[in-house]
Length: 130
Image (cartoon, rainbow, N blue to C red):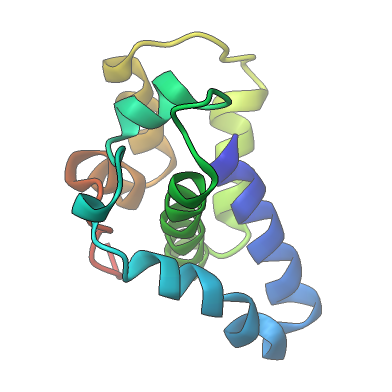
């Protein structure tokens, strides 16, 4: 959900106010500069487990959000608004609701090789241009 919301925001701004993107990306870029070792949680599994709970403090949530927003940026650069349409087609149209990690990785790979790489390399972001 977080990635989808970030991709929606990035896509909307890229279409309506592309000159504003550098300002929008300032905080996510700064958050990505924080080393994972500086936080109590940094894996995708920990994010899923602790999302909405006390163990996921605001600073850690924002760190995840920064990385997910940068991933949304990369996805949009690679696929344009088609990335949003593809996420919708793969996850929303078939009503995907409960899937294990392997199933999620397979679904993300259907959307983009970049997302498949992000799952494999987290917390590092994939190289742009995948």
